[in-house]
Length: 289
Ligand code: AMP
Image 1: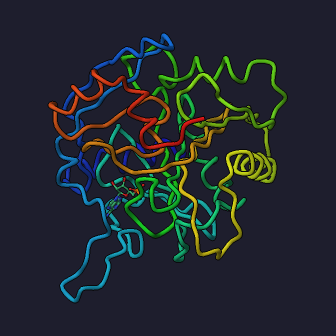
Image 2 (image 1 turned 135 degrees about the horizontal axis):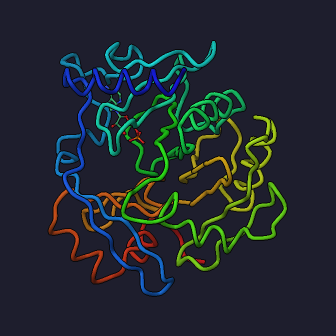
């Protein structure tokens, strides 16, 4: 079973040091304006985690996913995709779906990407959260196509699968499956739709393209100018947040942050979240309505 393979590989990789847990503590920051709580995780080892692809002595960019570290390999998911553990895990059992041959992270997701991703979401006991950072301002660090999947719930600190679940539920209540909606309660442009666990990969692809169109981030494969956005998927919803910057005052964000978990490298950075409000900080790296 895929979930037990993920658990076994994770236990061995953590023991051997091939994978590293990087969260040192967790706190909850209330977002008064919406009555939700955002989880703040302090990950001091984020300082050591590369934010750009590493280079070999020859100067050539190292692709960590081709070849991948065998100690992080879980199993092949299809002829086109394989599953790895994230070397620097933000949560236990943090996985990465990668293409077996090089494809660019700046190309849109395909139904083959969605098929492989959904298999991992479905294998996790309470379902998984998948996220994809696309484009130069999305917070991505690797050029080889990859979608990350983490088990839900995202945090023990909040009583829902993801901290922003209530905002999603309010936005999507009563909406037909696959219909893209604006999440107008948020202080930045974000779009979501309901999905069904029974959706085929093609249904997911249609929903993804509809969200991209509404968010204004759709583009033709191969097009030079790459829009930046974060994409998220669970068994019941899909979300897109167009991104304007990867970092604000030393706080970086990528797609997972827009589910309501913000990772900071140093405890001192927490005062920025407290002074400005966590969602306002996320808004600085996205676009206003
Ligand atoms: P992103 O930063 O969104 O491009 O995601 C790339 C992910 O790859 C990061 O979360 C890294 O922690 C992870 N990563 C970096 N090097 C490796 C590696 N050698 N094997 C597996 N995962 C890695």
